Length: 132
Length: 132
DNA sequence: CAGCATCCCGGTGGATACTG
DNA sequence: CAGTATCCACCGGGATGCTG
Image (cartoon, rainbow over all chains, first blue to last red; front, side, top):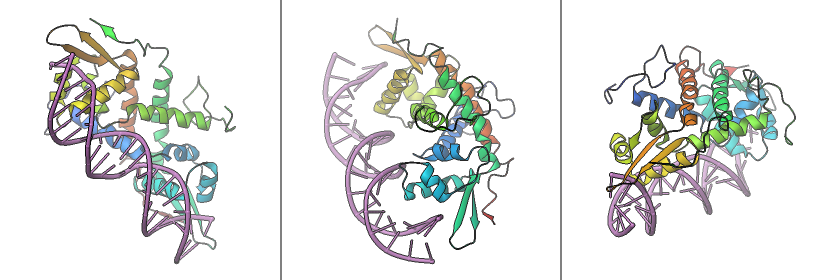
């Protein structure tokens, strides 16, 4: 709170938390960092709806992903509190992945983005360059 | 529509457009690609609210950005229909940047993400690892 | 089955200098 | 003022091989 001083509603609908320009910016940037990664979304969507999936299920369900990548992205999501990891102590090993409550809560937010994307044609996005 | 066949509501709130898992996934992925880039958000937030800013204003307002980066990100946003570029033919040159209508419409969607992020503590995101 | 270690390549973004 | 051009470092991500 020591950087910019403008603090009016950059985000109209925010009623509880007031954002400064900077706080809003690095808020979304943090979020994007969480979700960044070639396979995060595929994983997420496979897990939305409270589904639990084993490592090997995900591996099969996501064509093209390598084990390294799959585990890497899963671990990041887990570290960030989005994904839950459930270890069954058995031989052979069995590990399941699911979403945390917070992870589930991401769904509507992504939906908002999807809706925005869908508006693209309706609003004139490609007006070409304006002249003055 | 030739890849996966599961097509139930991955996104509960979507009433108009039905998404398959794949279409939803690369929907959000496209969106993230649009918004990806070290300076996009700072720019966006400086422009939210219909504000117009000159190149040099943005340059000063965004500490740390180089001209190359600033122009690069602005051009990408423009090409993607998010930012408008208004050229005033004068000497010395004057160019202003603003958001398109669609660009403006991004605001509430980002707000949804911010709200999600804010819920993090309230919902138990960091439960540690579950055992079974 | 689930996961870690290593090597390598390409693209993104940064610094710097020049131009209409 | 508003860019363009070049050169370079970094790291995300892919391939491959090994282990508890």
